[in-house]
Length: 237
Image (cartoon, rainbow, N blue to C red; front, side, top):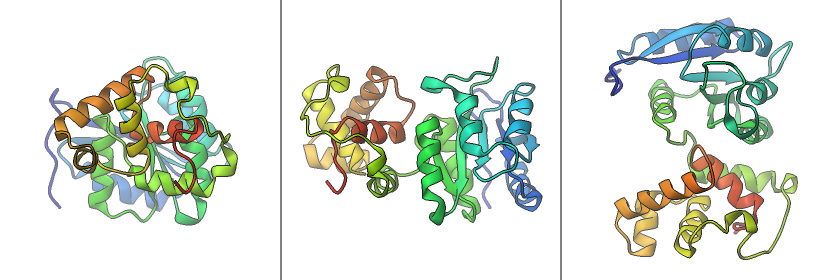
């Protein structure tokens, strides 16, 4: 397994593991500790212990299970990140990756709504686990927008429906930015959007960055959720 490089600041990505299965935590720790650019700074077996731990240690990324005793991962994520994604714990602003399985997609949906940056399958290959941690640490989305789209299509009844062509929430965006957001929500990558709109990939990346900034969103996953909630993209579109 190839080891990662150090972050730009020369520090390691600090990871906290939260899962009630000790064996799973041990396996993840072995994989992460073998990387030059990562270190596990703590472990917890339930949501309450996780919140207590995160009040004492600085973490960049939290791998959070959903089904745990005392406090589940969705509520722990909600308490950790609070409304708008700002951590309620002093000095700590970690990104949360939810650990789930395909048959528990509803938990992944709830966790994304609670502020998580994405989700991983519990049997994720080591290379994908490492890539996901590095991606979310750098500010990118962890799950592909296409995966989020399928997730939202499945649980669309939970979202308000509207046929408004330009929801008020998106009024701060230009017409081009709304067009780019719609394509992001359909699961297209920057390169695919560039080809569709006959733009350079760098221009698309700039548009996406402005969209996230104007709408106060952390990543593309939140952008997809917002596009569904506002009716810019409808289930099955």
